[in-house]
Structure formats: C-alpha cells, structure tokens
Image (cartoon, rainbow, N blue to C red):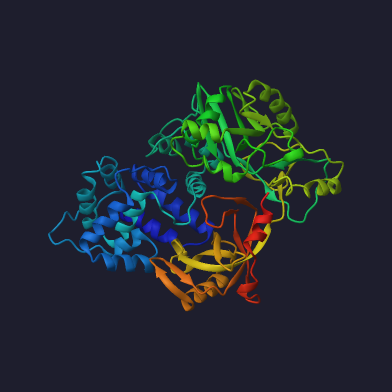
Length: 530
C-alpha cells in the first residue's frame, strides 16, 4: 500500500507526460503481483468497490472531528479524500501495525457489505499514515483525478514490458483485474492472452485539427463531422458491445442499438438520436437531433421504454474495422469504404445509415460548402486521406478535422467554485450569465477551460477580492467582470432558468475593457439557437 500511495503522490506533483510514464513504468517493473494488477485497475478506472461511497467517508470523519471543521477544511483543500486523510485522528487504542499490501486493501474492500463497510473502513484508516489513507480513499471511491488517463496508464505498462500499446488495448477488454494472465505473458511465463470470441475494443483512429492548412482533394475525401458521440460497435460470438472513444462500454445506455447489430464485425460511427435538427438539406442519411437531445440518453444504466421511444438512437457509420473475422484495418480508406457500403445494407436501416461523402470539385469549393455547416447545425468537416489505413491514435497527415468556427458571447461572471487536483487551491470553475430585457442576470453556462495559468491566477484574485456571499466551496461575486465565452452551439433547455444551454463553453478572453452592463443580452443567445 505504501508504494502505491507514493506513486499517486508523485503523479499528482508531476506534470510532464514522459515523467508520468516513467513513474508508472518503474512502479510496475518492481511491484509484485497482484498489487501491480490492482494498481493498473485503479489507474484505468476498472476497479469497482461498491461498498464505499463518499457519504460513508463523510459520515466517518464527522464522527471523529467537528463537522464544521471538516467542511471548512474540505472547502479550503478542495478534495474530500485529501481532507479526510489529513484530519483522520490517531486511534485511541493500539491497532495492528503490520504493513498493508494493496492486495490486502482491495480484497477487504471488494467483499464488504454495506453494513460492514463503516467499521472495516475505519479500522483500515486507523492502520495507515496520511499518504496511505489518501491513496486508499481515492482508490475506494474510483475518483483518482491525478492527471493520468486510462490510455496513459496502458502506455506506461506497454513501455515497462516492451510491447505495443495498440495490442495491449485490444486485449484489455478480454481481461479482468488483477490481470494475472497478462503479467504472465508480459514476463514470459505464459501465452499471450487472446481476444477470440470476445467483443473487445480497438483504439479509434483520430484526427489532427486542420487549422489554416489546405489539402488536395485528389488525395483526401471530405465527409461531414456530425455532432453526437463517436462509438465502436462490435459483434462477436453472439455478443454485441458499444464502446465510447475512451473505450468505455456504453452498451447499457443504448440497448436498442446493440440489439439491432447482430452481424459479425466491428464498425466505427457517430451515435445520435433521431430528429430534424442536424443536416437539413445537406443530410442525405435521415434526420438527426441536437446533441442536447442525445444527452437525455447518456450515462443511464437503465433506459425506460418511454426514453427509448422519445429518443430513438441510431448510428451514422464512418468506417469498418472487421467484416466478420476479417481484419480490414490495413486496407486503404477507399477499399474499406467499398466494404462498408456493402456491409451497411445488411443492417437495420432504422438504426444504421452511411455517412455520405461531400462532393466538391476542389478545396475552394469545399470551403464554400463548409460555410453552410453552421446553418445546418453540423459540427464541421472530416478530411480523410484516400490511401490511409485505420490506425489507432493520431497519425500526422492521415485524417484531419475541420470544425466550424465557434460562436462567442460576452457574459458576466456570477459564481466561482474551487477546482480539483492541482487547481484545488484556486477558484477555477466559473458560472456566467447574460442580461434579460428587464435587467436581470441569468446563468447561461459554466466553464473552466481556455485560460492560461496566469489568467487563472488573475481570475482567482478577482474572486477573492470581490466575494459577496459564500456557499461552501462556491462564492458569489460582484457582477462586474466580463468574460468572452466561446461555444460550439446553443440549444433550448428546460433544465436552466435562462432556457438555454451551451455546448462546449470555454473562456476565450477576459474582457477588462468592457463594462458589465454592455455584456450580451439573453435574447442575443436565443437568436443563435437553431
């Protein structure tokens, strides 16, 4: 447990990607089984310990220290696990001082009932020092937030044992923690695990931004970039799985799509719900609703019959990875496209259609066509090299994304909240609003990205010096600072008092030059809704 705690502590204070890779690789190289397997499960989000919930942790600490002290400390620190780890008092009676391994901790937590969890977790925390308590609580709640993605952890594992990370990712969904067969193979004690008869995830091919470059359409084919979520659908041995771009299994949220895909193979496409929002006259494949409509389906473990009927999901297919057992990823895009066009008619037309290519004589003509993307509520254009194989990750020169230009609005900061991780000492999450015709300021969005470290310090200083009220970790501020907010689109929303919801809001500029009274009106945003 001590080594894992030291790893997390080092990762939190290490910013460089290569340095983080080395920290994880070094840990995996010297840590015995099964501890390193559980560590990988924790780092990749595959560790499920249902007996420990945040409410239980709060209840335990509030039994031992003044609840007001805990809440004030939590507000200052910005992280529950860190606050509890630091505040946890020394036990009043002697406890077992023997070192606790990571495997010991996981096995105890995995088999806890809700009734036994409080007493057992308290006993474990009594045995650990502050650094170990922090690691235990982070692991138990599944909320590491240490700047390490699942992909980075797998890359570190691949680096530690000299294997290809793409191969590792293909095997991952066929394995389960603590990955004994995987480590046996990596260290030469066993055969390579196989993904046969398992609908595993394959890494998505990703695109670079086109920025201000131009390409020759003799070499590249343009397609519309739709506004949904990218999914991979795999059917093997009678099983179908849907995976998100990060490799998360989202089958449970879209059982209607999974049930309709019973043809052996693996395809790549954009998952949306039916409607008339996106595409208009440009949409040759059928109507697609806004992303706001798709959000009604996202993240649900169970989906009601009403939800299935009100928000019917479908997938607009971009590419094909496998046709049956045949791996097509090494073929050029033109050949895969032909195979995909032959594959789609075998699927349910109510659930699957084909993303159409854009007919343009040259890049100048394509620029004119792309100019209509906002009016058609389409996210932008993809440019795919005609001879490109399907390879995981971003490869220079193969695929480009050419998103439409963002919308902007001048908004007034209303509230600020502490961030997490390395931003936990700063007020870094900002709620902003626009004026009604009656002079009322209503919230229209929340953003935390788009600013530099220097701008973060500048905004944090403003929040601390212009606070009107405090609500736990949230501060209400004087309505005097204008932020220029960039966003991809805006939709009607019944969940917000303002009646609007922004898509991907981020801070473009701090408008010190602009009086708050001159910020945008809500009516201006309403006119931007399509």
